[in-house]
Length: 100
Image (cartoon, rainbow, N blue to C red; front, side, top):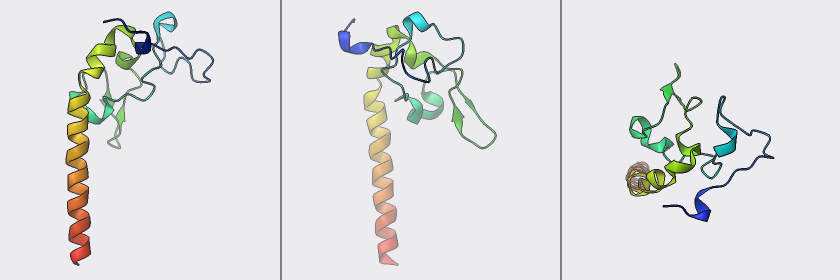
């Protein structure tokens, strides 16, 4: 579904476009930092893991294509579930440290 809030192109950004070979006429900056990053290997994008274990999305333009807005928004529940689980784990570890 087309929504005005689903697309923003910041052409004056010093990093625009932030991905080599990107279609600059249809480059969405709305998800400048991809919300799907936290989904790891389940994000659906074109990523790779570097030798140091960091996920590199340098070759991925999935969040920057206008037509993918709905696909990203539909995954927000997955993202919040991961965040909630991480928070619960962090709180548990904090409680364990307090007992020591």
